[in-house]
Amino acid sequence: MALVDYSSSSDGEDGDGARPVAKQQKKRGAAATGGEVAPPLSSMPPLPSEFHDLYAATVRQSTVDDPSLHQGRKRQVPHIAGHWPSHVYIEWRPSYEQHAVLTRLLTKVEESLDRETELHPFLTSDLGAPLPLHVSLSRPLSLATADKDDFLQRVSTSLGGAVRPFAVRPRRLAWFASPDSNRCFLVLGVAAATDNGGSDGGPLMELLRRSNAAASRARQPLLYQADEEAARTAFHVSIAWTFGRPPGQEGLGDLPARELPLDEVMAWTIGVDSVKVKIGNTVTSIALSGHAPGYDQTRFLFDEA
Image (cartoon, rainbow, N blue to C red; front, top):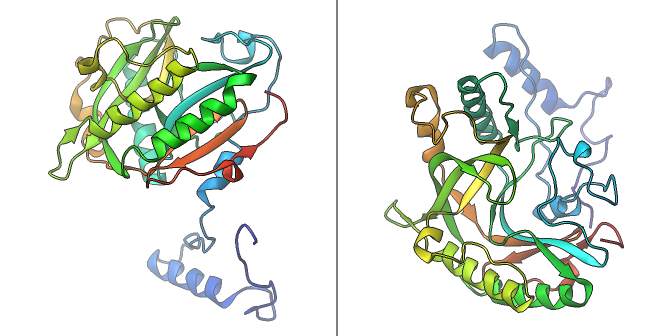
């Protein structure tokens, strides 16, 4: 089956090769803008969600930890030959409108910082392409080759039937100082949305417990394991980072709220219907409908971790 379906290039074309639909859009755009032609609306179907998993990993640039290749960052978990860097998370791909709002938000935050503090967004790649964001359900893991298949099977079976699809809502904007590095992250705290418009940690906490159980069986560190009450408010989406803590920035209280598009952000509802498990360069999507995809839906980019 083709990735996307397009009709033949000769279908519906007139003599100059332009399609009637495109011409109609062109005329409507010119009429609506007083002669200035608006760009035609795209008629291409969206890409399947599985397509993004094919390119979820970047090309390895070095076999050793080289901070110069990553804006001065160092690995939290050093690479060990025969071990696979792994992560369990919920993926969020902001819409075009959400991406624009987040970009404006980061611009306002950056304006509040001193000139020596550089803010590094997570929203786009080095080439300017939009990037997905995520809510972590595990710490960065390092799975031995002998453990990785068992871990994937265990976490897929456990998380797939844990909860039904749900939604999360942003609840606050704050700085978070990493306990494992010298970086500080600008994060959107999130919580599961309830039917009455409130928030509840139920589905997120259940997924966290099951992810931690699988990590424990694989002798890996746990996420938010110290205090369950604190864990309920710890779920977040990182949207930018900087080295060190910005001077005087315990939060964003010193920046007038009216200058931030927080009302728009806090009104969002983000649907969650799957959990992603990344092991090396392989990403597996686990549906939350009670069905855990088998290995036939696992995508391999490279043969080696």
